Length: 156
Image 1: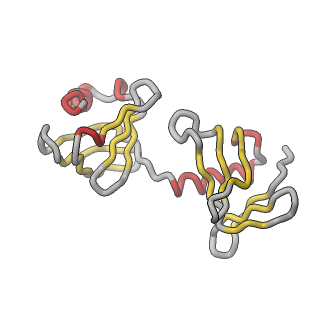
Image 2 (image 1 turned 90 degrees about the vertical axis):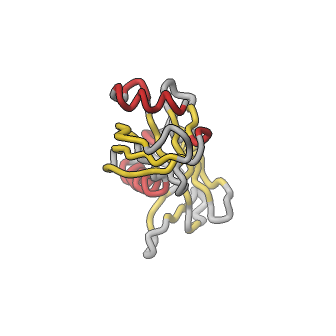
């Protein structure tokens, strides 16, 4: 797999992109076009000036070292815990405090409005925005336990 660019980290831990022409760009930011529905497809490498430097159609086409570097950077930038279970809610009126279990451990979130729960294109997928600005994902609400589904139906 030969790519027309290289990607590395500088001494400050920031991404450095070197294009086919040999020009280096520091502070590069990877951005997914379809972060939820197709996370490994359509990734743009953006300069510090918000200009697209490279379009990556599919992460799998990259050499392992580049793919690992990008995956680590994207994971750090896209903190989005997945809700696996809703333990309890303080009220069925908003704002309400939710105690949930996520793939990153138990946490509490504040739902300010029913509008903070959005349906996504993927069947059964939801995005929940809490009062602190953290976005949680429910990948498929039909796979949640009955108790969690019952609570969720009250807000949808």
